[in-house]
Amino acid sequence: MMIERFLRKEGFFRIYLAADSASALSSCRTDKPDIAILDVMLPDGDGFALLSSIRQFSDMPVLFVSARGEDEDRLLGLGLGADDYMVKPFLPRELVLRLTAILKRVYSSPVADRLSSFRLGEQIVRLDSAVVERDQAELPLTAKEHAILVKLYESRNRIVTSDALCQAVWGDDSYGYENTCMVHIRRIREKIEPDPSNPVYLLTVRGLGYKLLVKEHS
Amino acid sequence: MMIERFLRKEGFFRIYLAADSASALSSCRTDKPDIAILDVMLPDGDGFALLSSIRQFSDMPVLFVSARGEDEDRLLGLGLGADDYMVKPFLPRELVLRLTAILKRVYSSPVADRLSSFRLGEQIVRLDSAVVERDQAELPLTAKEHAILVKLYESRNRIVTSDALCQAVWGDDSYGYENTCMVHIRRIREKIEPDPSNPVYLLTVRGLGYKLLVKEHS
DNA sequence: AGTCGATTTAAGGTAGCTGTAAGGTTTTCG
DNA sequence: CGAAAACCTTACAGCTACCTTAAATCGACT
Image (cartoon, rainbow over the protein chains, first blue to last red):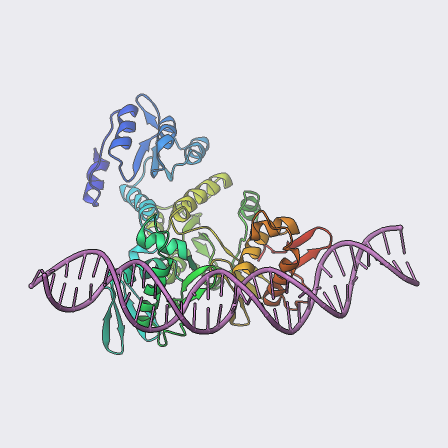
């Protein structure tokens, strides 16, 4: 199939082709692909019914492809929870772009792709190499410190509740780590704050949680 | 504008309309909308350039709308990191479905408890970071103040009874906190009202409760 | 087994949020 | 008009949530 070749060339791999609805459904269930491309017209039924079946057990991304471009079809497809709906004929390149757009939203945590480094005044925090640059020196970050900073940075300029923070670092059964977390916060402050006792970047919001202030450069 | 009315009816609120690229850009920066709808053809430039500017500082969702449906345009828009590209004319209903599809992917990710920010005249109340921006300063909100504002914002422009408010903040056995609540309301007013003694945003409705006035128009 | 760094526990200390209370003002209603 | 009810305003004391430090424990590597 043309499209498949193209997708493969674009870096998509692990591509499954299904001959009929039943095999497509079971493939979605067992292979758990990252995204599904469904044709509305299928030899044994329509893609809408198939999507309904998929939605019974999965919220996976789905893109419809169809020769039928009627308004009702598009509304129906999108209304069933599809992520996009393309009408044939279309450029393979556009398909790739749309797939990429969807995958970007679904599988990258909001800021994971730019999990590189950020600046706090004079200091530069490098999450990818787990160090803090300050005064021409490099302070290493420990594993826990790093995990906490990642979580805080993901929600920078917003409050992260102590619960959410503990859960992100110690897992679901994180009850009882609040104190431990506080100690780590203190250590982090000693590395990123000019004056750890009067924080200006990693603030505590009494009764709510912590907040990492990062000025976005224009 | 037609579309705006339709979106509002569909439950979208806090809608900003920008007259030109510059104001759109600054609105994206300061108002931090959940999603942006850009027209490719703008009075002072094109939407592509605008998206590039936005992508400098934000990964926010963007949907293009255009009278130009050429292949190159669509490829360009999607290639720049847009989430979707719709060609006019289109059904308002489809716009809503596509917006919803994008928002579902972006904000159902772990982070978002979907607390937003809103504007009260000159002030901007940011619930996600628990601050009130006014006169180039940031007034922090305490935990209780924050909880009260969340409840009031959930029922903005409608009356919230004192009972309901207390229950939302202090739990089910909240009898006897009416006075306490009043004190907190006063403190909130000192942060969000131009003149706390003559409130215009957080109104008391004698005998019934309180009401937070939030103009959705910009 | 021994060492060293990372992590956790524990205990004492403190700032500032929260609630209480008392007196004032405005509205309602007999 | 007068009194009661509803709400406002202010100040202050207590306590909770958080800080800080030091010591104990864990874990990896030799």
